[in-house]
Image (cartoon, rainbow, N blue to C red; front, side, top):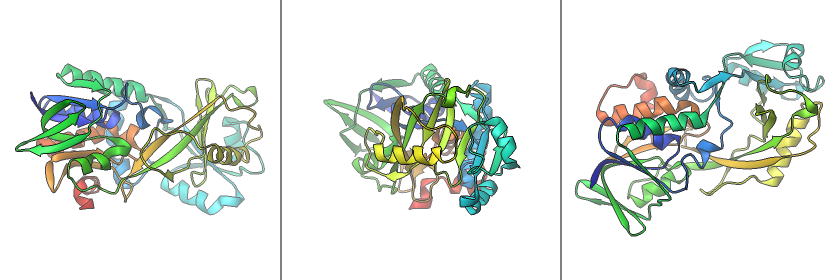
Length: 357
């Protein structure tokens, strides 16, 4: 069988694209792990904050909001930026970039009582920032894709990709799958997939981000606490199931791999968090890491490659892939189908692969 589309990657980028493309033709999704969303999609402290990221990314986030709301993926959280005299300048830059409302340090401590009164003297607030259920989002995409006849297979790693006339041949073990168009949604491995297919890479750089799960500080009920970020995104914390997730917010360049937390980086990040609170870290219950993959300009890469239109990119999601996934998938489908996207032309131009060629 020759499929219309073969999608490599079963995270939000790949399953989202498959959900939108499945109305245009037959689809096969290949995921190298045992489960969908194993890597970055399943390791994110997912939030919906529409002012986070470059302008084109924010446009994708805003365009994704209705999908998130109508599918029950959002719940109230709130977002707080904190700073002090030691980082006043970068705090002011973050306030402007994120379009936050200034609140007093006292108001901030009313929301999060463990904030250190000497180190946290400034705060910004965004009430509309919300928790985002990444698994519900992923499963919704998968259900939609399957309803349109898409096939999803796991534990399938492409070892060779070649062009045979008007179709692609993707070799997986002793199997060869054929498709007219190839969708590269391989996350941190997207440039490697491009190289296998004989398509020029886009300069994708995976970057590690680590996370620690802590007991609720000082026995506080953290359920209603917002997500908290230190000025300059040097750390962040977010409630999760009665615990507190704390990240060093690092962006260390690495090779594609099954990521794990670096102990020293994690310790340094927890120390930065501790400087801003009154409760010390007494125990880390668990830790993990994920890879956020960035194009050179920090924006997503979505749509057909200008030098090989049958090769379709859905890559470079960076730290924005969860919240932008509905609109990103829609843009990929619109560009493949030759439809006019709903996004402004300037935003489309900032997201398509042509800008990197």
